[in-house]
Amino acid sequence: MLETAYAKINLALHVRRRREDGYHDLETLFAFVDDGDLLSVELAEADRLTISGEFGEGLSTGPDNLVLQALEAMRAMVMPGQPPIPPLAIHLEKRLPVAAGIGGGSADAAAMIRLLDRHFVHNGDARELVLATAHLGADVGACIVSETRLGMGTGNDLHMAGDDDVRGLAVLLVNPRLPLATGPVFKGWDGIDRGSLAEGSVLTRARASRNDLEAPALILCPEIDEVLTLLRAQLPLMARMSGSGATCFALFRSLDAMQAAAIRVADDHPDWWVMGGQLR
Image (cartoon, rainbow, N blue to C red; front, side, top):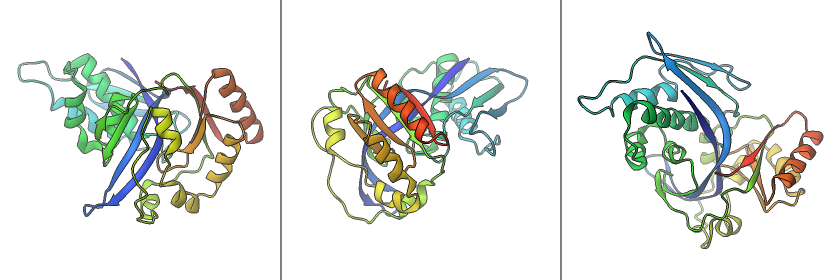
């Protein structure tokens, strides 16, 4: 049983206010790349999680891992009278950098939820799956859907975002191989509400909007500015930091243009992580 944990990007991210519970009210445009981490699952005598891949070193394989927490959440969703989810051997190939603003553990948990629903739970209602697993994290719901959505509240209040004219666009992701924790970036937000997202199609809204976390992220990781400068020099439709960073993305009309940009970025900075694909 196989499933891809699709990389998440925030085409735009507006922070509106800091809440009393420590979270922030957001308006964000989620989009998803057709590539990411890989989950493989098979029946076993007992649950176990193994992790490999370039970014797998040091990651927990214990009950604090979101993949195993997703497994427990889905076991609770099995209807009375239906067969329980059996013990599973789970392998995660970690191809996406961690603490990188592109989904990380949320995408992995969401992939596990989709896989378990398809093979064992058979709920099929994305809204129910999102609600039942909301405790796993604010981005998990969007990652379950893994299609363009408008996220409100803490990000888990999902809506259609309008004319989805970004679907199929070529996208290039670049990370300077520097982890950037979400908490300190949000803490560095200046608290100024600069207004809501622009109106129009998804691409129009994204290009006319912003990422309010870019400024505090640049203070913590100045290399982001170098990544954005190089991406913008490739003349994309738009280039921006995703989430709380440090991954940045650029959108292109064609795969050829994206691949040419990827080559130039890799030539200039062979030490950076680069991944290309298309938006789902």
